[in-house]
Length: 285
Image (cartoon, rainbow, N blue to C red):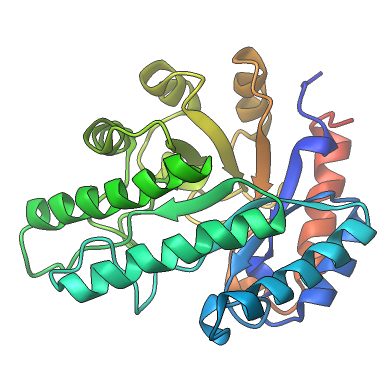
């Protein structure tokens, strides 16, 4: 039996993008989910909608009280960064500065929600300029963010992307390179299992190369392997992933990132079916 239990399962709110935040909370309550990964985008919460830090704080405290009243807690804050107007590697300094400022606010937001975890991915550099130039700028920007994180006791969880999403960090060697070049104790790894499979890698590789302390979050979904599907709807070795986590004494969060537009009309069913699959087939307590 896997040591992973329902107490370690979280759900990212991004798949509820066409529903209200209250609907997401009610869905989590019905599914028995206690851990929340708040995606920082409208219509749930977007920092850009609040002109002052105090107004943002009031909104977040309200969201925190609602969650805690249902016995839930936030275990990750995931600010939206893949789209405009943010970039770690843009040639334009003002865009990179804006991204650093955004993460400065995201760290405050996370702490207000009651978590010290902030999610990050590398984004994509312009495809018409040398990749190495974008890489250097990304390293510099992420390093600045991690310096702020160190002072606040924040962990930055960096995931790898798929090639259609990024030309910077899409596999394990690039993850290792980024960790080495940023060289910050605040920077840790979220392994996205779909991106890992697309790269032809496996979870044991990540442990062998990065070590147990570095892997502190898991994006868990099924796929073929390209999609982020309901558990059981793809052909990925879901039980094997849990066995590897057990082998390495993983005590962190397993985050259901069932992020595919085919589920946006009915995200509740996608999560409920995945939770049922966990309990019935993967021996989750």
